[in-house]
Image (cartoon, rainbow, N blue to C red):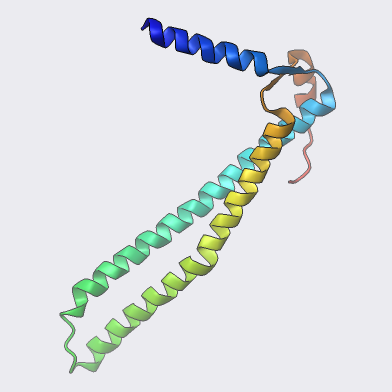
Length: 146
């Protein structure tokens, strides 16, 4: 318990010495807009990650169905062969979609998020805002679309 308290005190004191107070309203507005942009980029990234996870789950289900149905298809029945072939083609289209658009969109979104986090850290990281100025800035804050 004492060791944990000491470690927490060291972390807190180390962080406090690195923090700076921002009093300039324009700098505070800039930081708040960066925070909003980081949140928007995170939401976009998470939505794209969810699409990726849904599509890969669909692909896994199709792979399981194909593996299960492969041995049960009567090769002399053109209807069964056609259904199985359609399922394989659906699986291939889905895999191509994941490999192309879905992964590319997710990677681009992660890159935009990381860039925005880096911009926020560079301009505003380790800082806190003068409270009265912060409240005034929040009342009139209008952020450009980033």
